[in-house]
Length: 151
Image 1 (tube, rainbow, N blue to C red):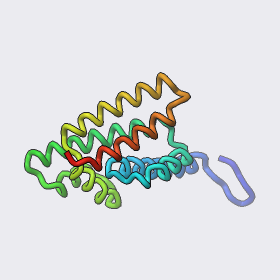
Image 2: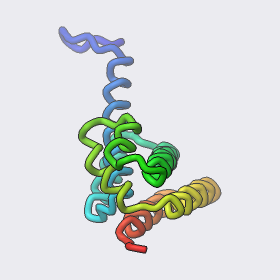
Image 3: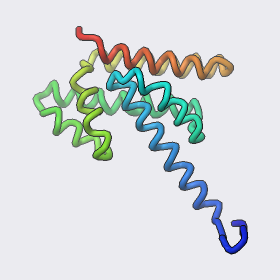
């Protein structure tokens, strides 16, 4: 805690606000990548990094979202509707349209390949810390391009 004039600010409160901003920026970034929103990726990446999101947290968020989409895609392949599968992800309502678009764009096998790609990028960013920014940006752009492919 510190006092500033008549204001008293708890450090925990400041940390909570920064964490919230970081999480929101990360959600927008992974949604843009998997929904194929190329124009949004650079902006959202910069926003996430400015919010204090680490490179490792970005990679973890991308991996988590890819695995969630894979699980939902398998449910769709088993006969569940896209709306129901996305509803099972428990996303904030603002993220639902992009998650639905991503689910329609990605097949289970392509999502499985994307999960492997995220793992490779994670390893490379750890082995080459100086290049981690470029590795992550290349991964995000690659995922966005892959979501636009029709195969």
